[in-house]
Length: 464
Image (cartoon, rainbow, N blue to C red; front, side):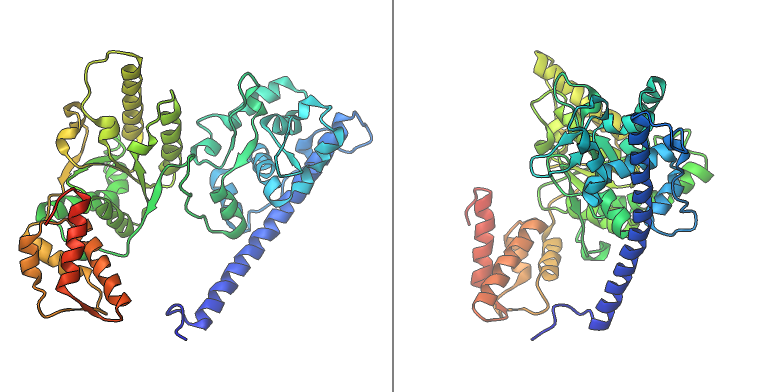
């Protein structure tokens, strides 16, 4: 039986051991932090009952563990952001249901009679789910001034909101804001438990997909002008900090870089963004604006806000596909819907211009983008349909080294005869390759190529 990969067993064992060691170190720190968290909850319960025979007058007398010598991601996160008692307790409160729900059982003993402690119950989870009220109850008790000051933990300017670490779930209509459940992101939980942060998953709360590729510039078939303009963006990313800092251009320039990619489908717009990310070490996320725009007031801004907030502090490249869904040419404002659409545009423009990294807007036709927006782009890059020689290169680069072409296959002739973009060509190659494998052959026949091309034409309503 063939091995599943080229990785040797010894290297796999080594990788597993390193991962297990990392988990062990992170578990050690978290156990110590959760133990401190448990003592704080016990003390708040004691103080709330008015007991006097305790050596502490405040929960702040219980100092959190010292992780100044620890090398775990959790310890580094605390040191990097200089997090104090309030922030650390808030983080433990949010992740306790995931790691040690029993610590919160202390709140179940009151059976909901103490409204000050807040809290909620889940549908499947049988334990106590903390809310913003729970956190303020533990940290401030009945001290109104302290409770008001602690609201900063949920402000838009706080680290928790900016990096989507923990947050309050939106409260039900007509209920207090702090009655929302305290939530922690999956990425943050991964980071502090294993030392590695997973990429956020696509969903209604995060309508963006991670883009990656194994290719480099030499693998892409692009027009010379297109490649040169893309390399200029790469140079900006690589020298941005020196430009803005050492050269003191930060006071004169907008913080980020906004580019427009335009051209027919399949000409390499998304792939080029992925290559830019790979070569500069940046994660790339693709947002389909046609799928983000909502008819419900405020919903579009809410979805986009989460992407910008997280991307800002992780230096993501944001690739907005179908940009004309928002930035298309607009008629005069006639009704409330038009006015709201203009608010969406204004909001997105504001966030883009404040973003310190690379933002790419993509469209099939440049003319679809309103002229008023085009002056805001630092570069406008065409992705035209490939010419004959470029199509021949695309065909040559697309086939597997395990396959071979039949003698009657002339790629130059096919390139001349059929005007296809790179995305369509790779679809045809995939079709032909599957047909060959199914027949138990390595040879790609002309008939299967023509059939694959016919199927691509049919997608556009064309016939051969």
